[in-house]
Image (cartoon, rainbow, N blue to C red; front, side, top):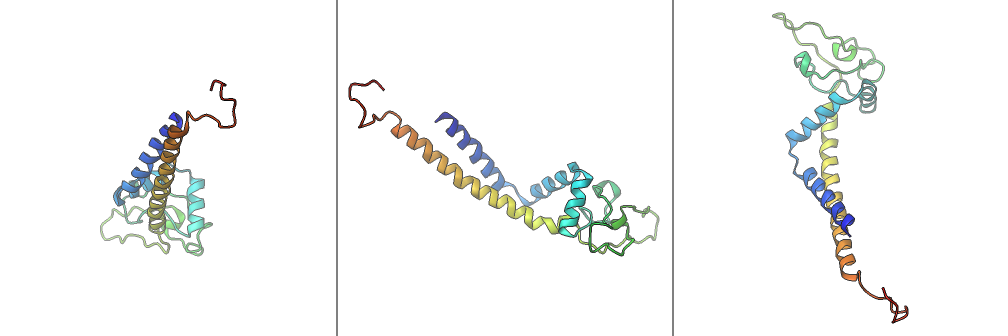
Length: 157
């Protein structure tokens, strides 16, 4: 009973947290996940979602979050030498230099809806199962000391 109640508290709090996270926080979590992932994982995401890089290529270099080149993994970069596809960005700080254009969508733009839906689904499923756990706790409390009607009446439980 105690373990089931602790599981209820943990699952309920995590489900509420998933449902309470706002859009900006979801974006920050996605950004931290991209920054913490390996280049192999980033290349896999870029390949599966046909995207290149996490954010806009017009951001300063420190805010781009880096990514492996997209030439081998994305269809949109198949025949392109754009900086976002190669991962080699020229110095655009010179006056009059236009920011490089990218033929691919960013991974953030393709994944944002999926991330938002995943938070909502996880929170909803977590709430459902946390309430079934609290019903289990109540049933365990209610029926914990009942005697077996087929047992010997003089037997000690």
